[in-house]
Length: 142
Length: 424
Image (cartoon, rainbow over all chains, first blue to last red; front, side, top):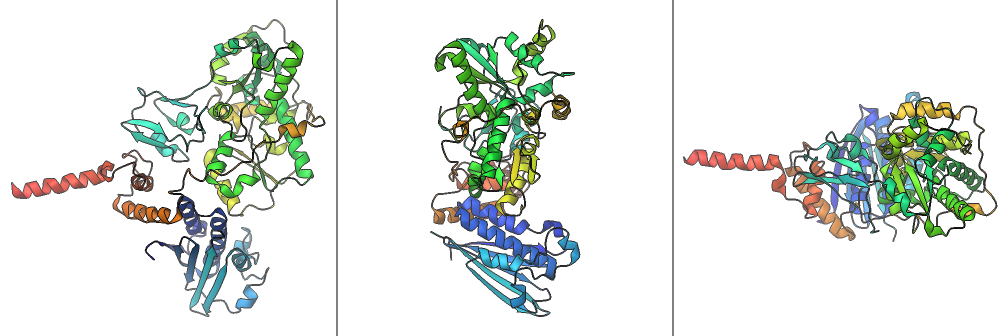
């Protein structure tokens, strides 16, 4: 554990223009570490999608990132409405995003499917009215 | 030439050790040590931002001296199209080309002609499906260097074609050899350059063993002589053979427009370029086939070795293009292979990472974070590093000491002073 790097970010639900900052910071840190480029890309994309989701659907939350030499683990936690039907949410093209974010190119219903595609492990804990915890793991392929 | 060559020169006397260049450098490649700005050569991408910002004119770009053309039996000038945007009221580029011959060159070959060949080659490669999309232009050496040291996942997207300057030099040399019967070593090819990055590129190419260009002379260096010669021309030779596509390469969007498609993006100015590359890396940019990136605002007309305001030059370039044929240069059989890179662009991982060993790297990162927490977070630059985070990194790398932070020092002195005060 002593060698792990722990990063924590609060994700504001108030300011949509700041969404993506946390994943950008994580990417910067991983690059500085000289991390595997493919793993960096997958972490950056998956975390970005999750961060955007948190802002669109859950009014923000926080991310905890743990970097190990062979993997990156990310927890994205929010106190949003929860996901009523996880299976449906995982379908490509299914989205409950409001129109105002769709005009920005979001809400294509690819968020969760993309996160799954780019990560090695993805786990959702969600309770209606309480919030959602999304656990992601990206392994370094060597 | 060594692995790292740089065209940015420092006039140590004029440098007062202020933080202007330090703060502006997009790759954090400058440190002020001993009251003078020093460049970390391996990080420098020759974008010219430090030259542009320095209020004391302590930074300048090295470029080849005009006298050097005399060391060759036959010299050919290959002017960048940006040169044509430097003259007021110019309506025919033959004035400029004839002027170049007047000031000492034996012949002239427009780089814009080669630009048309590169555009045609790119269109052909795209059509044949041989390129990884989106394709990133390789014409701006600062951008290529930036990708090489910061964007590993994008190296394969860079267009594997020589920049127009190299293609122009190859053709000009071949033609000069045929015309004069001289051998290659007797022919000097000189690029008339709008930027220091091209000067660096011919000394240490990003993607080839050796450049075909023998020297790069800054536009501002020859401008007075050239303008004078152009004012006193007795006759104007019909030399120009560029179409509007080639001339358009002088400004941002010109290369992209020459793709003759509408799925392109053109960004200029180094900060904008970095933003686009970040987004590309995260796969946020979709539905775009071709990406033109220029380190200078406005494109090559924005290079620091120009004399004219980039936007004035841009307007002139637009005027000059009017009524020109679309393109006057076309690829002959077999010449496309000659334009391809001989080496792949490979990521230089050592430049920014803390250590090659990931475990060691992570230990350093944790220490860096501890040190950063102890720094004031003002990013004032007084220690000689651009930010407190960069300072923390320098300390971890053993290149700086915490006490070089003047705020830390002040706090320390305050403690000593308070202790003294209490005992006296």
